[in-house]
Image (cartoon, rainbow, N blue to C red; front, side):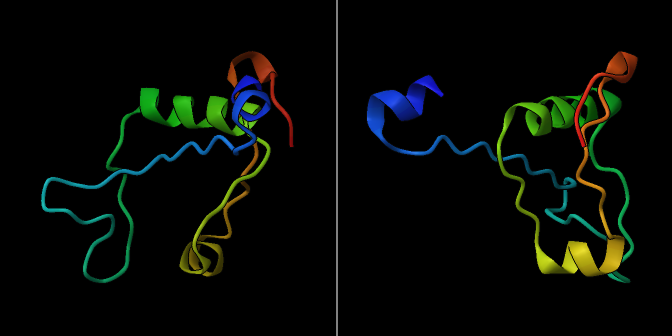
Length: 78
């Protein structure tokens, strides 16, 4: 929030991951984890502290993501 107050601009956080060959899914469209548990936990903290989450339409249609925060000890928000 301090960044926005100071600059008048939104603070944007981007999380992306890809395999060594530059892919995020197999050629069949099946996805496979390309991050580790620690990275996935970081994403839940990002979801908790950011106001908006944006995903691509392909992700929404294929995976129907919950986009909720699942923090340790049951902390978080839906």
